Amino acid sequence: MKRLSGILFAASSILLAGCASTITSDVTAFHAWPADLADKSYVFTPTKDQKSSLEYRNYEQLVRAELQRLGFTDTPGTRAALKVAFSYGMQAGTVVVTQPVYDPFWYGPGYPGWRGRPFGPWGPGPFYDPFWGPPMQTTAFPVFQRRLYLSITRADNDRKLYEVTVDSEGREATLPMAMPYMVYSAFSEFPGPSGVSRHVVLKLDKHAPAAPTAATDKPAAPAQ
Image (cartoon, rainbow, N blue to C red; front, top):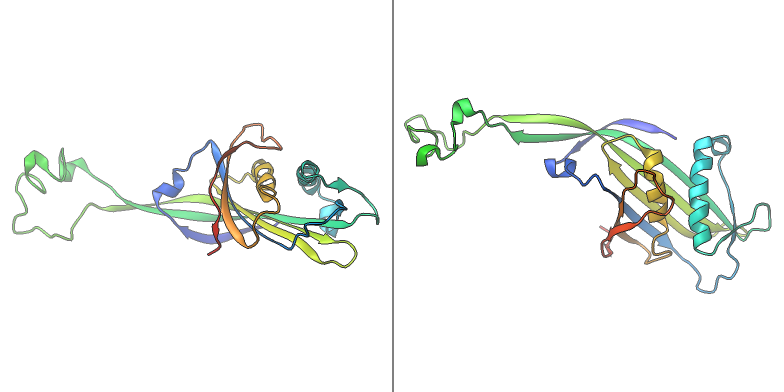
């Protein structure tokens, strides 16, 4: 897994105030899923690096559980009709928030209408500048963008049937915690509409269950 840094994000304080009890994923799927597909046997096709990764094996179990729920059968070897591959990663960046800072020494109680008069007891006065305001403070916070990409292809001709990208953002470097929710989101409404981006919001459980509970699943919207 690669961790990339140096990405700068500009955001408001609303972005940082997200609800800690849920995790939101942006899900975009493309597919050419045949309605008459009878054989749902599959095999995982990890890369050389993934074969020796304990982290990959943990996420593979999560994907296997979702595929089983959808009626797929894990069939190692050459007998499988489908091949399943996935990759994942996380980028570290920064959210910059700029907001006004109010100092009671300069603005007094009740600013900007102290005692019913704007800008203090003296009113606007000769030195009043309508463009002058409180000083601004800029604060930087770390943010982590997590991504999961998964594809399902035919084993006989490598024709791709399903591919999905799941993006999730958080204030902590917690890809293992977020992955159960991202895997669940990748298969929600499977196969669903093709070429449509949507938000999947799931209740956050401290035990990170393999099958999270949906909090809100916003209606699908055309991809931008």
